[in-house]
Length: 271
Image 1 (cartoon, helix red, strand yellow):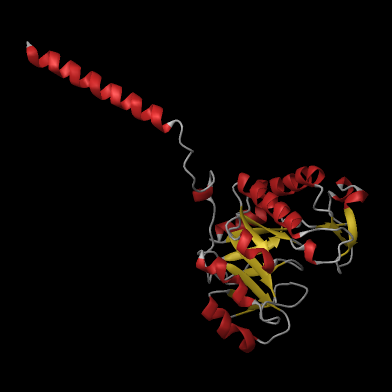
Image 2 (tube, rainbow, N blue to C red):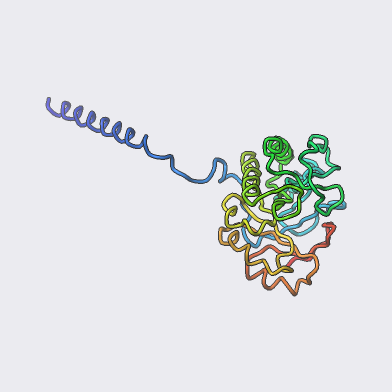
């Protein structure tokens, strides 16, 4: 008759210990780790070849596993067709500049618009006004998600380093870039840091890859290595240098490099 009694006592002791353990843990901070959905997001690896086409009739025959195309100009069917060919697809959007031909251009208040950024119909945005810009950019990222894109390339992400017409600071830019990254991640999209080399040390943890123009021409490619060391692709283009001038160094750095023309049509010459 004594064994059942001892068993009950032992079980009660274990239950009490379990309750005590739970109570002790309740005062500890929650464990940190990847954001929800991070494991489900696409993560391009260093050296992954790519195609970047923002003008002309889309050429879907280019031998590249990643396509970066305009989010407004292409349909869900186009994205699905590229997926059917085994490709990942990046949604190009301008998040730091206004473009007067976009279908949502009328939603941008004039008070947000600064100086031109050197391209016809484009003007820098006052990225300090996140109260207005957040819903506008959320709607654009909804478009990318709803069309089935895997990732987003947000352009004009370094306004603070340019003559925008606004007194933007580095802190303003970091805050805004992190906002764009968060909005993308909330929609299950990977997101790339476009140019903005000076802030890579602060932002490499917030972005899933980088997109860079002309780092070889300006002797800046080594500054992108934090992305490569983190196992994240750097999608890189040059416009004016022959491939012989940048491909050997690009390969040694682990960049995904190619030569393109400024119109960003279908033509490419990859390393």
